[in-house]
Image 1 (cartoon, rainbow, N blue to C red):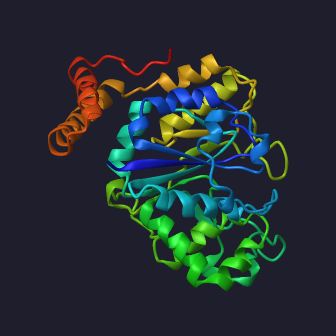
Image 2: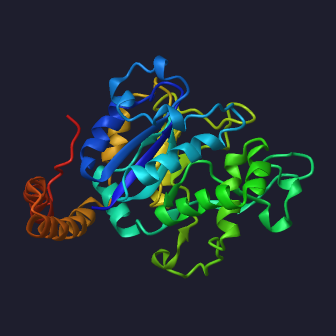
Amino acid sequence: MIKISLCFIINNELLKEEIWKKWILYNSDIINIYFYYKKYKEIKSEWIKNHCLPLSFIKSTDYLHIIPTYYGLMSYSLNHDKNNQWFCFLTESCVPIIHPLEFRYLFFTHYKQSIFSWKKADWNIEFTKRANLHLLHKEYHLKNEPYFILNRENVNYCLNFMKYKKELFITISNGAVANESLFAIVLKYYNKLKNYDDNDSHSKKEIINKVSTITNWTKMTSPTSPFVFKDASKENIDYINENKKNNKYSIFLRKIDTSFPDEILQEIIMKTPKYKYLNFKCGILYTFLSFYYLFIQYQKIIFINFIFLFFICFFHQKIFIFI
């Protein structure tokens, strides 16, 4: 079965580990987890240790130069499981903000696409030497959101670019904050960044130019760091809900602080406006998939999944709950 690769870039912990573990549990049959870390010995969580990359994939990085973290995750996860189709890049301060069932539905309906927000660079290329864009042709003066979802094909393009355009790759990577430009440049090089008509259905697009990780850049905590969500103030909750409402691809949130209440975060996750619609649609889809695996591949665990999803489809109950 096709799967999702959750690729975390951390120092030594996941700020909301328990939230993540509960959220992942409901889709554990289609999720693989990978952690890129700094110092393995400083990791206390056994759960994280069990999903860490081998040491051979870990390279030295600093705050402004983290391209090796992405490529370590890509290189390992791409080959670790050939069924990985979606590669979600996340940090230790990210959290999920949509229902597990909604996430599953988005994956099965968009796994051949990337959810990747990009645009023209909006800074003075000559004054600010980010990603060394001043050394590149104008068509490559691009920026992208630093945390995104790529499909398997586009991950392969990224790895091929590093291999076959090595000099250009090194030039860009040596620039500061290159992770906010490199991937748009790679996809532009392979002619994947296309200007679609606004009326085109998202289903027709290879790359959906939308944010998958909500980040508040309007209230930055430092010149290079976005706003940190520390409390469940009305302003913060409204910001999250408004972004979810306006962008159905808003799956994750960054940056969350440990002080943000878990119970409020769970309420946000479980709040799904189109829940019944999703229940029915997902139920039909997963019931079909379960039948396929039950009778064709004889996987016993799928039989349990089938029974479970049968109730979702026909009784519309909120089965996925945090306990």
